[in-house]
Length: 315
Image (tube, rainbow, N blue to C red; front, side, top):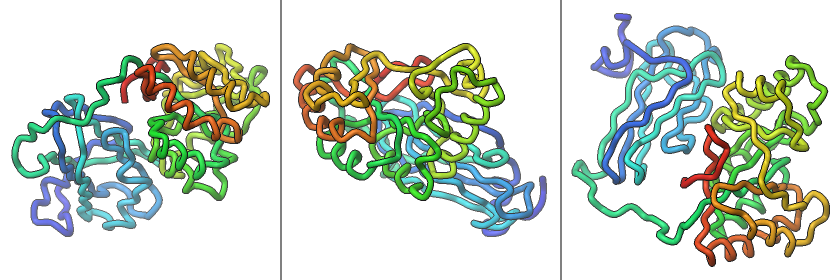
């Protein structure tokens, strides 16, 4: 398009776009970077017709932005994301729409000081294996869990949440994002073993919407309530861009397991394996410092869940 763009002199930078759901992996040298995200609303005329989020290195940096509200139609909007540390050779940028399609006109990447960053990225040389620390049924007692996880250094973790529990607590989702990722556990905690495809889709779509509206990226992993899985559930989740997983170890916290038993269940995890725990269980909260200590003692580290395999991998 050739319409004038307000707020800038370099109109051509904002007169084209890439829209939809997409991501970039930009090859970079290990270092610290500043990112500039450039965007403009070139199509919609009314606020609320398009909203989307942008993540950088897996962290939401722009949540549910509405460009009409921010800059008006044909108005330039630039967001600066400073101090982005990259240690794996690729800078990740992801665009996740919550209504219509996400849009970027372009982005720029700068080293922190304008020079090549040759400093050594922080690493944990004691990580012999990575395990998946996960909590279902939230948000419930989120602040207490997040504080305990940070204090013990048991990060990252994965929260599988129910949309009905988000309710008036959208801030809890943003708290979760400070210690890991948020994924789907269906909108309500219901056994979907006898559900039709349409019923499963309704549960999953409602939950994705609730999660995105609370400021998290659209889920890529689905854990069904009660671990009930069948071909219909897997197929619908796949159509919505999610892999379906359960767990390798069950902590039995939901069944009244003592803190020591929960710690022991975590201690049995092997490389890549995932454990089931719950955010509404006090004993799992109490177990966090001991879980962290035992994993560290044998050189195991919490990992993120790979959206292709569901296994725990290096963050």
